[in-house]
Image 1 (cartoon, rainbow, N blue to C red):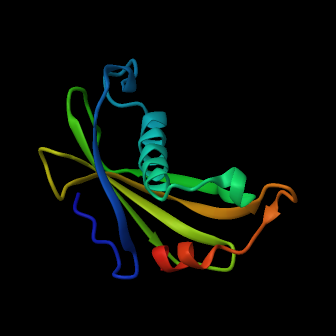
Image 2 (tube, helix red, strand yellow; image 1 turned 120 degrees about the horizontal axis):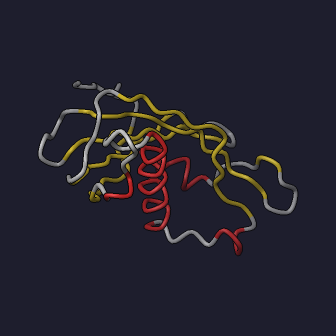
Length: 139
């Protein structure tokens, strides 16, 4: 399936990763839970590139919700191409989006999903304003 993302979604990060044997289930295809792990991995790798020190900042990102649309089955072995996008920065949140392709089939989306990211103040455990530099990055 080909998926066109609206122009307002901004590409933040790309990476590749292997489909591991352990990502499969008893039916011989990649387990649904693995797709959420793939999306988590690219989101965390992107955050790692920002060198966030959440403890020192007193606040940081938390996932408010997550979803995944399964377009085609994935099987082991294979190499994945993941792309992370963002959109809609608000006072304390932004939307993140991920596409999952096989590296040997560029442009063919096997799964797509996303998560709402909320910026949380650790001491109050409440939503806090997104730092302006994050808002600029994702907007």
